[in-house]
Length: 208
Image (cartoon, rainbow, N blue to C red; front, side, top):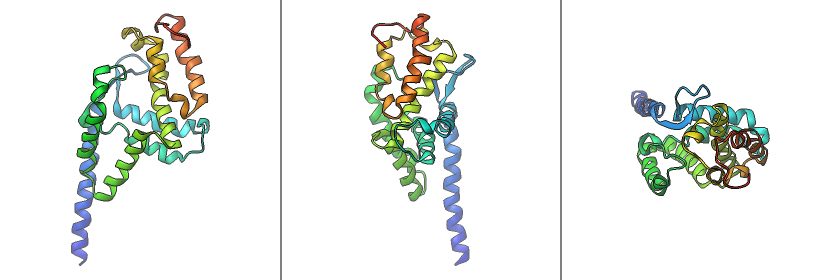
């Protein structure tokens, strides 16, 4: 009986370790936001780590009371499906049309490689982020938007300038940012967006 339990536990552990090895691939998914030194684009794993740290540090600015550990779990998981679906650039209008279908298929493939209980747990957190209906999901989305704007400001709006981004595009991209934190959205407008309008690295086609 003891030998059987050990074998079962080893099988479970094998699957979890295999999954841990698999998600290393997140480090190879390139985003379209420069690191603070402007030397290269960040990758998905760096982005997720940064959001988790920001969740820990900025939780007091959430509009609503939140479970910080749950937010950290959500942001660490939210882009894992891109291992199979790839990153969809925020301003890629064609890619955005198929994003949901691609990412749902990727989630099926990805999370099913875990033991059933962990599959359900991680899938539920990912779906909570996608549905964006809970206070934790709202705050996770706010951070997911706030962090790229922070890096844009740190690189003097480099990616916005290179992409000839318009203010209307940035505002559309951030339409739900205030839902998780009005304070962080107001901070972003003042410290991240307004300076790039002033230096011409973001085209002003509407009012901020």
